[in-house]
Structures are given as structure tokens and as C-alpha cells.
Length: 327
Image (cartoon, rainbow, N blue to C red):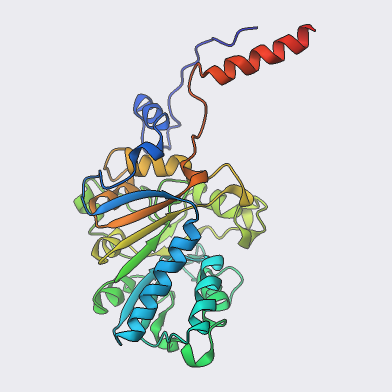
């Protein structure tokens, strides 16, 4: 039996990009063919690397070490949980007695509930709690940053979190990662609606309802047992705004997440949209291409996402199956 029927359909109504031809064209592109400094901002670069964790950890350790050596303030926006990176960095900070006294931590986003309450750091549902357990608590006491240097989200500071960050001179570096919905953390096209990219990058911190894709994405991560238990993921978040990322002196995006610890990667197609799709508020992660920074991409994320139409391997495979059936 030949599989050659035509079946057309439109994207689901709730998807931001409705041009099926555009989406299909992006899907057939290969990330590995679009590396380097080839984007709208010549100071932005995309690189496929063997171990993204290592690049993330090495960069974070180096910046903290230089803040100690030069005795300079270092303001970081961190995603969490990044437990493997936190453990690696703290092992080296302890080994080489590097002090974090000058380091200020802001969090990309934190879970909240439908009433506006924010998960405290000592809650099992807290993203910042992973930082406290796997970074702060693993450091030698004499190397830790003062607690006041860790800028936790609270119900009271949601609207002013961007102002707190700006008062520190903005972030020296913002570490980010994409969500399944094609946003950066909890910044997506529903939580930060805008007509233009300039308008988008003026928007600050807020309380948001998470997109269904973001909840599904998180339900596959280790903090929820990689179980797909969507009902166990908090429905809301408090998040920095696009303007905080735009104001950072540098941005490092890390793409290496896979479902339940293995392929396929949930970030494969969102990253294609971010790097190869239109620069548009409906494609919010595309903002990274307008700003100085780098995107480190794991090989599993950069690998082809699906077979191309009439790919020879599929024809050969079907012929092999047919031969066995007829034997």
C-alpha cells in the first residue's frame, strides 16, 4: 500500500503563527545550517555544542570568579531549576575558595497561584528553592552571598521586580531557556501581548497565567517526577519582562531540555521558530536575535525534528516492511 494521500489542515486557532506554509518551511530547515553570527544583530551568535551544561557552568563560574578577583558587583538573571549546573559551579567555587559576596541573583520566573500568591523559596513548588538547595546550601558558609543579595519573588514585589533590577543597573548577564510554547521562560505571546517588538521590549514584570504548553512542558521535568502530571504544575507564574532581558548587558540562552531526560527535545521546534522564524511579538523568543548574546544548542535539540516529505529512508523502510509482509 502506498502512502501518498494529500491531507491539508490549518494550524489550531490558539497558535500564534497561522501561516502554515511559513511554519512548514521553518520546520524543514536545519539548525546546524544556521550557526554563527548571521542574525539581525551581528553581536548575537548561535552555536551547536557537545555539552550545553558545561558551557553554562563554565561561563557562570568564570563570571563569579572575576567578580571576586576584581571585587565588582555581578548581577545575574538565572533560570531554575538548573540543578546539574548549580552543583557543578558550587563544586568549583568551594574547591578554589571563590567568594560570591558581590553576586546578586534575580530569578527568571517563579511559580504562583491563581490568587496571586507566590511560591516561597522553601516550598517544594518553588523554582528559587532549587537554587537555594543546590547552589546556596552547597556553598561553604564563608563563600555565600548575603541573603539580601538573593532577590526572591514575593506577592508584594511582582509589579516592582523590574524596578529592583533596574536599580541594580540591570543584569550583567541573563541566562535563559525556551519553553515549549516558543517563549522565554514565562514570557510568551499571551502573557505579554504587543503589536510591535519595540512595544514588547518595554514590558516589565507581572503575574501571568501560564500557557497550557508551558504547564505540559514543566510536567515532564524532574521536579514533577517526569510524570506528565499537568494538574500538579502551578497554573500561574510571576516573571521578569522582555524589557529586563533587553536591558541586560549580555544574554546566554541554553537549549538542552528533553522529555523525561531523553529525546525528543521539547525545544527543537520552538528554537527553530526563535532563530529562523519572523521577528515578531507573536514569536517572542525571536527578540534574542536583536540583542548581543549567544545561544548554546545541544546536539539533541539541533538534530532533525522529523522526516522530510518523500525522504528516501521512509520509502526504503516501507518497502522493507512490505517485503516481510509478503514473504
